[in-house]
Image 1 (cartoon, rainbow, N blue to C red):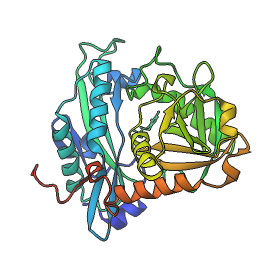
Image 2: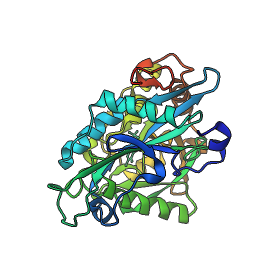
Image 3: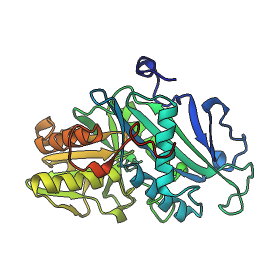
Length: 324
Ligand code: PMP
């Protein structure tokens, strides 16, 4: 069983002892894919990322909006011609069971994978058996600094929905964001912002973007090749409730980023992250904006079960035992 001490020294990406594979719990080391599994060569599959937050006072672990993630996985599967192996409530229950089996009492990241796992090398989506797994790994610290990050606009563009469906979280489509992030780090930045093929702001490597100019909030439309983010949806709700602000969907130029009062990144791994610099220009005076920090804190509180707002977004892991 994993302990808090063990997880504190553990590495992001190293799985806990148990994983759920196809239809049963197995030791993570026993989860196997053949070396010629279709998805290994072609990225033919979809994945999700779900966060779990530990609340030490309540001795409870909370999943943040797991149903929304499995619903999006269902949409991704539908686009790719795959099928979810279980209904969404069952997948949420299995995720709780996985965390309990692993004795997770620390912040964690859950990785459901649905892919073409059969060893067949046809470049096609049909007639190849799919493989499903849920794994979990510790999150020892911030995924990226939550106190304000420096971004560069990447030389890599977001691949258009015409080439790879962006509403599906397709495994193979993460080569572009990975190249962009690597480029940004190599140039001394924290994160990359990718533009669409025709030069409008799309999103960061693994998070959506929201900007504020005065009291006007905006985010790129879903048709600008972004993933329809769950954190973005939560942030829009909180901005409306806290500030009466409506986040408008409209196209955003690169140069507009330079003169915004606030730029926020929103994603499951990152949370809500203020951007303090883009391409060497300060954003909002180079310090995190008040609204972004407020929303960051509210969402953190909700995720950890310390803020009573939106209980429908959190699923307690240890007090939800109906699937036992
Ligand atoms: N865009 C991309 C490309 C991502 O990988 C993610 C992370 N899933 C997001 C946006 C943010 O989506 P979410 O808030 O649902 O994690």
